[in-house]
Image 1 (spheres, helix red, strand yellow):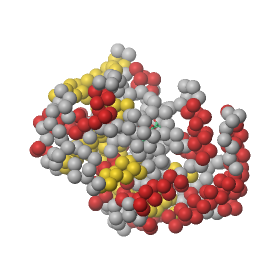
Image 2 (cartoon, helix red, strand yellow):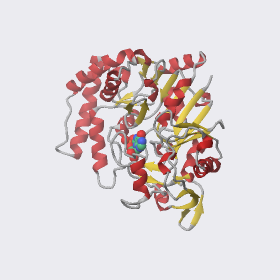
Image 3 (cartoon, protein in one colour):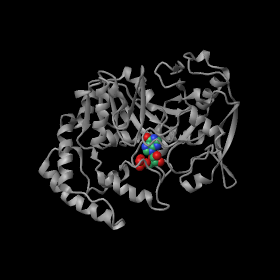
Image 4 (cartoon, helix red, strand yellow):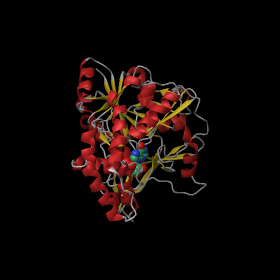
Length: 431
Ligand code: IMP
């Protein structure tokens, strides 16, 4: 009963979507267990590009059942927009999408609430602005939380929103006398209609997953965001609000994490991050610098917000931390093609913190901010890699670079990606 997890080992956007898409050939069920419409997955198949934020990447494969687990937060409007995008491309996922009736719902007041904290001088962490944090706050706070399974019950929903909206309106006006005010009746009607739409897709996904697991189905868990954005183990407070690491599988899907038989860690051949927060290997070297070159060639702009991603050298200290907390078995090195044409490449193998050399990822983000990377330099290559399909056809320096990443992390490299298309994938044959 193979149960695999694909998890990002950096600050998100590691091209997990492509790996999930490549692997769904061998899987019958794909599960998202954390995050919400803050995730951005770009999947290319043939000449079509799909930008998904809430739907699991597996949805575009026929016969794959996609499950959105209880750990995910759902904005029904966005979910429906994504479904329409697929329908326009003749992908009707119909009964193949199953959503947990325990997943929490993002309401428009969550987005407004987030605007307040993000705009307060010095408080903002550079979120995607999708109301993710406030929705998870309500989940943990319990009193104001509303779950998908409640939306289709109109009277109940109206009662809940009457008290929740009164609180939210006061909160919003307390910070800003001009703040938007919500009408509980209108919201109840709007979200009840969403509830009717979602109802055929809702299920107790916990029992469903256990049944499928017992039936021997191949299940693939799709981590959203990256491990360094994990609320417990990432670069807190510059993180997201959920457990993006493999530990989130048990709580976010109801299938115990120990059932996962293989953890595949996804890494870009360099590092990126969006939003604020420390980034020791960042290349802030101007419009003609290597950072900008990587951004241009790698098209490093956020899928959700369009923000330019901050780019930098591969950070093996951070990646080692992520590999450790996820229990990674093998890694995929993505976007290696982007590094062609650089005379030399750097990998941070340690940090210097206040005059001391350290090899662990610091807990305190202010310490991480003071860390100076200690680099190892490797030779670059000039050749374009986008048409390479065999490991033996890679230029020696490119192969050496990918191998070195595996060597430092003490993990086998399963595949190397040299372009967004499925065909631009080199299987190393090592795992
Ligand atoms: P939030 O998840 O919208 O609350 O944003 C918190 C932090 O996580 C911000 O720095 C976001 O840019 C970052 N973030 C959230 N989701 C993603 C993602 O899928 N990729 C990259 N960064 C993300």
